[in-house]
Length: 385
Image (cartoon, rainbow, N blue to C red; front, side, top):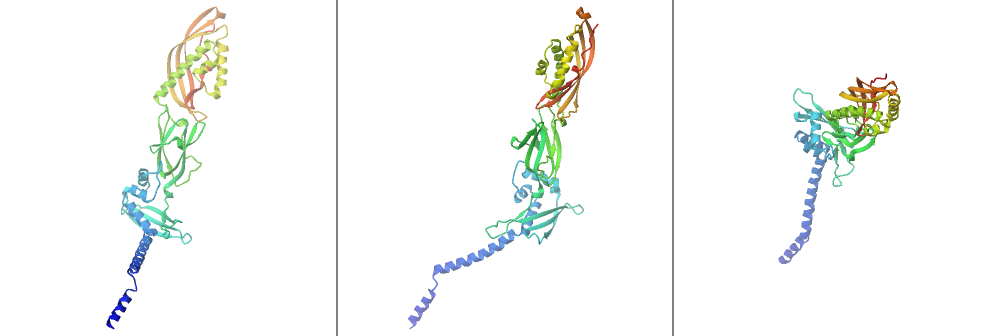
């Protein structure tokens, strides 16, 4: 009897196989682990925890870490260095010492939570106040947990476009704009666009051959600037270099000599225009003046027969141009000796003289052209009788 009882007890103990026990233990372990993981993930994905991590990263004074925490995407003008400059300009980042935090929820916007953070520089200083909006994304983490994202849109200005002279190059904050960023070229201006920049102050520099670099600052707000260029730089805003000034003075003086040489040889205006091009919209009127000079002072029996230029003295100044291109005015004082045929062509006379000639030159399509010259308005002085 005792033996039968023992066998029955052993049979009862073997009712739950060891593999089943292991499976039960595993399930219990998974349940405990899952519970702990769920509690942990809910804490981690809670908006309050996200904002606390943001503040901790912010207060670490590591712009690079904050840049990556916010999930900002790098682009031509958006990176850790530009973010660091933005923070320093925007809120004197390096001087912040402490903070205060308040939370605000709007019942009408259940997927949003805003936080007002007051960063302190010192006990008696005015704080820098920042309002951050956290938005709950539609997708879930691991299919169950909410994802809260800090809205960084307030840090940026969108669709930045600038206009610069055709043929020039430009840089923003030291970064050169590329041909891929050129969106349009119309007349004297080329339009460049960038996806976005941090709000605040930025530096632009425009460079063009023959001109001094033009530099200026511009300020951006948290705005979409689409279809409204934030800065336009025209040729007329630039200044030529000293080397260009010397070249233009030399060109104006040589043009005056070539003009009289062509007129004395009765050459067509086209020959002068080929070497010293005139602006298209004034070419016809300048040709008429040239023909008048030849008809009135070279063709008659009493006429100018030669002119010997002795000395030039010229100065160059900026001038106004209605088409907003870059324009200069070259004032040339000159001494000369004029020879003329008098008394119906019976003999020649020579006389010294002096004149002041003003030549206006415009910069168009990458080259300098003559807009006007008083050398065509009147002839040098010579004896007629």
